[in-house]
Length: 632
Image: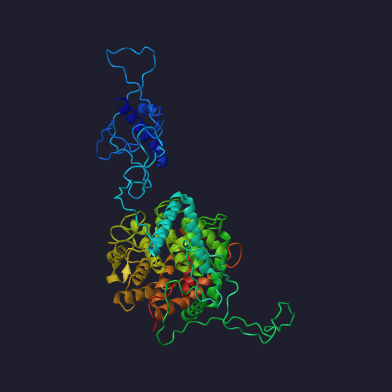
């Protein structure tokens, strides 16, 4: 009985030793934060001297008693070990020496006893070792490693592998063991470093300039099968050339030589710029390239100015007007509607003033990236986008009904600048602004002072121009909501579409609303020869010609665009008056030089900034927007 207990105790201790080694090879997250591994939290671990006992369920129950013995015998490799004293039984004699009784043996576990390692056997030997094998624990349990299973000999000697097959098998096993050992022992950062170095080496070889003599470069990575003492280094700097060419002359030195250069332009006389002649639309079809803003600079601008009747006076007036706008810009980049100039608006509207000034500069070809007024436009557009909230609304500081006009004008400015430059920085702001426009559209297809309010023709016209600018710039536009605008225009139309009222149901057309409605129809797809379009243009020409005695810059702005797109005799008649009379109204002296006074205008409440910007738009019409209809 004592021998059986000794065997059990030695087996358990051996399992504890093996379990301790096993636990050291497991990941660290099992050793930390586990109550089973804390001796202070687990009484069983206190008894096991801090060693971990892994619990492995093999699905079998094995009885640990004295009947299971290892090949080395029950007493172990070095002799017998005295068994622990048996525990005192109830009613039995007390321990006279007062010695502590040993703890009872642990319960049997569902583990198989380890198998002794394989040993070298001679031919004809029986199963079992010839001499005792050193043990790692106490008792009959031995440590078993992978691949160390005992073999049973049938009395015949083993046949060793010979020849090429044996050598190949040995080499493959050795290579496999080395690769596996390196892979398992190497830390993860070292493997990552090696992989990154290989990738960098490949990229360096691919991007390095290769001489003409180089044809192919093959790089192989791996473990060499045989060691080579004399390795040939690859020298990319000295390629082997099959053919050599001898220079007929010596190489030239890089010494600087002074020489005299003939001035090619010293005899060229200065030529004054020719005055632009009035327009005479000749016969033949005129093809003008798109997009909408393509004629604001370069050769296309010069051709359009000559074709549609711009003069030196119109260009000088635009130049003076832009210079006046530059002087009114604040240090923070925005413009004000109420000053600091004379005759400002009655209320402040920084959003509208900044947008209208930017549109004047952009109409003449200036952006935040190029043009003589690049810095002014850059500061202005940064101030404008700083006003925008996450929904795209920019007129939060504007009061009352002017918010809708300011928001629409700011949207046009952002869309035009993005369409002219394709600057990715500006795209998000422009897209957000046009998204807000569709969110604010009313149920009848138009726009008014508040979001989703039934529209009127005045506010709707500004938003239609914003949508067209967004479409020309390549922004995302909702076609279904664009078609709703035509539904609104139908409801506000009079004279079968030749005239338009301020709101649906009024049945009273005005020149300003008619011009604004016809411009929307032109952008929304009405053909030039469509009867309501022709009647509307003739109605404006007959009843509302350009007249400085009836000063209405708001009407002039829309009518100038309608006649310009329509072309022909109606445009020529309108332009003959506009290109002469409008520059004559410009202030040419004093601190307000370059502006247009608002006192006589029907919309004088808008102030000097309002009348100046709209007058500049009219004089930029020759190249500001490309004509919608082909001219015959």
